[in-house]
Image (cartoon, rainbow, N blue to C red):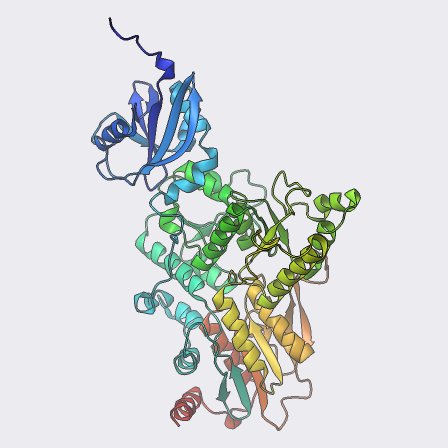
Length: 585
C-alpha cells in the first residue's frame, strides 16, 4: 500500500535570497515574470541550487519565516558576486521590483514585502556582528598624498609647524603630553600635544579623495557633509563631489534650488557612488540606498569609534536596558546612533545634565501627570511606542562621541543617585538599575585626548586662546567651553585666520549650544587687545577641533604674526630649530 501524498501546503521550503555588493537581489526570470531564484525542501538543496549559479558566496544566515499561501518559507540571506552561470538568474534592484508588482510571482512578492526590517543588514552580510565596517588604517598605510593633489590643498592640509609638534611632543596617540611653546619672540604660541584631525576624520577624508581619483567617470556623492569643516567640504566639492542632503538631513535638489521638485536622491542609480561620512548614517538613509542598488559597505566611512557606541547600545538592549543617549538630537552622529539603537532597545536622547534632571524627575515621580509629561518634553527624542511606565525601569548610557566626558560622567552619576533613592540600592545578583558599571568608554578617545591635552595647556599662564573649527563642529565647541571657563572673554571660537581682523578685535562665533537661544549661530566682534600687543611677550593658546586641518592652524599663526613688527619675530625655521634643540637637551 503506497504512502499518502503529503499536502503540498504542509511542506516547508527553504528560500535563499542572494544579494550582490550593490544590494541587488537575484531573481529567476520566468518569461515576463520574476520568481524566487533558490529554493529547496532543505538547506542543502537550496545551497546546491545557489551554487549552480554562484560558486562563491557567504555563509547562509537565516533571517525570518513567512507563510505564503499556506506554505511556510524559511528565508536565508547570502552575499554573492559575479555573473550567474544560470542564464535565467539576474540581479535586480529592490526598488525596480517594488515598482513593478505585476511582474512578481506571488511568493517573491510576499517575501519582498517582509524584507523591510532586514534591509540595513544586507550590505554587511560578510561581517560578523562584532566586526567593524572600516577599521583605522595603521600610520604606515595612510595615504598622505591625497592631502596635496595641488598647492591649494597642500596649504589647507599641511603644516611644517604642526608636523614638528606631533613628531616631538606626542609620545602616544591616546595619552596627552605637555604642550609645546613656540617661541616667536614677541609672541609665544602654546600648542597642546594633541589637536586637529582624529583618525576617523583622516579615514573619511582619505576615502573621499581616493574615491574621486579612482572613479573619474562616475558620479560621486557624500550622504551629507564629510566633516564639520567648510574648507575641507568646499575643496571636495571643487573636485566633483556632491552632497545628497544637508547636515540637518534636508535633501538637495538637482539644480540646488528650493523650487525644484526633483531631488538628487531620486536620480541615484547602481552606477553611482555614495560615501557615508564618519558620523555614520541612519537606518532610513541606508535603506534608501539599499533599495536603489547603490553599494553601501564599499563606501561606508563610519568611524569605528562611532560603531563602538552602536555595539555598546546593542549589548545594553539585549540585557534589557533602555538606552539613554547623551547627545544633540539634531546632530548627524546622534541621529545615526538613535536609529541604530532602536533596532535593539527603547531609547531616549538627553542633550545635557539639565535634560537628564528632567528625565530623572519623571523616573522618580508617582504622579501620572508628571510621568505623562515625558512625551512632550522629549518629543522627537524617543523611540516609537515608548512606554514611560515600562521603559524607564532600567537604563544604560551611551554618548555622542564628541561631547565632554565629564558631563557624561555627571549624567551617569545623577541617574545612579536618583535610581538608588527611588528604587533602593541594587540587590546582589540582580541587574543594576543603571547599567554599564559606570563606563564612559563610548566617548571617542581622540575627543578625550584632545580635551586632556587642552586642559594641560590651560595650566600655562596664557593670555588668550583661539579654538579653530567649523561653526557646526560640536567637539570644537567643547574645546572652546574649556577655554572660556579659564579665560572668559579672551577665548575665541573661529573658523579660520580670516576671523582675526587685527590684534585689537576678532570675529568670534557664538555656537548654538541652546537651540532656544536666538542670539546664537552668528559671528560677533570681540575685543582681543585694543591697547595693542604691548611690550611683554604674549602667550596665545591655539588648538583645533577634530575636523580642523593642520594648514589652518599654521595660517592662524601667520595671521597673528602679520600684525606684529617683523623685526621682533623669529622665522618659522628658527622656531623649529629652537624646538628641536630644546627637545634634545
